[in-house]
Length: 471
Image (cartoon, rainbow, N blue to C red; front, side, top):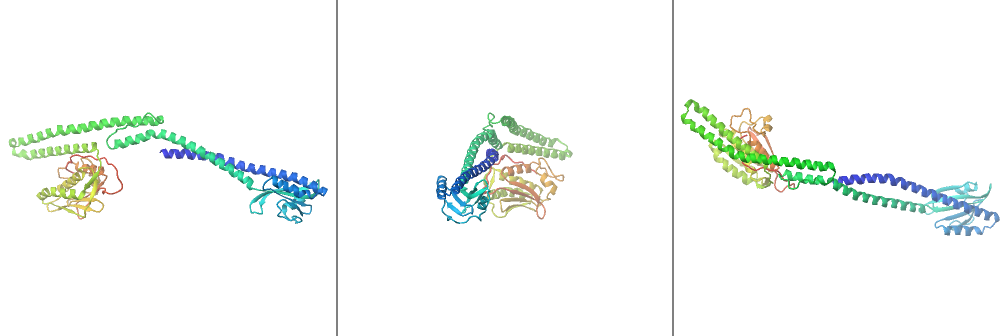
């Protein structure tokens, strides 16, 4: 933002300078040309009067001296004098022989008709020259003509100098504007820079340096103060929530365990016809206990920040598959690992294990006996947990990540917190998870994590804690 502000100030200053200096330079150049033309015309008129007087007196030998003296006193000037027939009487440059007829040249012909000509034309060297041609006349009597030429470089050099001076002045003004703009932009953006640092710190779960609310424009100071106040309240709320999660973790587990034991102790004293209701009640208490554990796990996930680390995906897959195989065998379900090695991936500590455990638990819960759960690896660090169960309608695949959501046709005792926990862990590790129908039936839970070695690095807010079971 500092750079954009400085560029804005410089662009505005440049537009103002261009609007002032270009017309000023143009007017100065036109003025220089006009003054130069008037000066040459005045000199030519005076010389023409002197030359006409000498011609009238027949003193032609004085003309070369007159032309030579003027040319020597005015560097670059050239004087040509002709008689009334257009024949050259003298040329200060010596390039035109005496007696040469110039009556055919337009300016000489006009002067012999008693007309003055001042114009710019191309000189013998190819450059532009200013030529002032005057008649040497007394009344209506024409006795000759005089031409004075000056190279236009005398004017263009002065024009170039003034343009260079204007450019130098503009550069100095722009440098001063840049210095002022830099100082002003730093002053304006200082609260924004401190606010950015504070926001980054808050994103990873802490605020060590509150934004500066004592410098910068009043609006930004008020913004920084409001941010600090909001952040303080937010941190207090998060601390209260974290405290509640920690407290509830201890306070809720004991009563639920006690309630379950008391219900089980009722069994010998109940009529056998009430045993099914008692078992259903105990099952609901167990489900409530798992739900409490899941909620506490989510609370810890949302209140804990950490950074992704390299994790050996192949080793984790093999370990979790070996751990789940005995339980799957009890339900006559096979667990296999397939696909090429995935290599190391970025994940927060312990996340990949919890992700696989939750997805395998969900798949095992809906897998019929005799089916297979496949832990498939694909190029690009894509992991798939594929079951051969009843699958899930496309409309329910996105809703499955909502808390407490359970399919209307679900008959298992899940809590509806397993997939939300998985999504938190995947997103905190910088990855993505989707559900889709598996080929041949069933559900494919597709997890895409970032491979180690990719140039892009970032910090992710991740949450570690126990993972609940259930979809």
